[in-house]
Image (cartoon, rainbow, N blue to C red; front, side, top):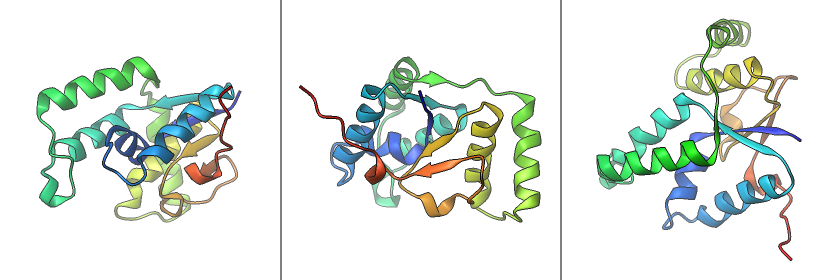
Length: 152
């Protein structure tokens, strides 16, 4: 069984039926689960989800209400394993941003990498693989790379 940390963009696209990537997001996660892999989330991903879901459509958000967003967050928590935040994440993050000279917005993705490493998660599923620094401890996977599972 392979463990996959789901990036925020996966959850957002899988929650927005109007997204051109909706089917790919939903099917890639469903395929991983059908193959016996585990899909996990972390508090940071849920916080980022909230930011985009409640932001107005005019500024690249989903325009959802607080109630709608809360309901979806609770659904995600019941659907996927929520990783516990530990002190090890901060130490791992600081090591990554220092070693790889990560600056600016990419710092958020470095923290997701730190969460994965600190929790022995080997893969991150994301629509933005280029946002993640390449390191030996992690495999960054685009949904296009997930082998579809045929339903019988």
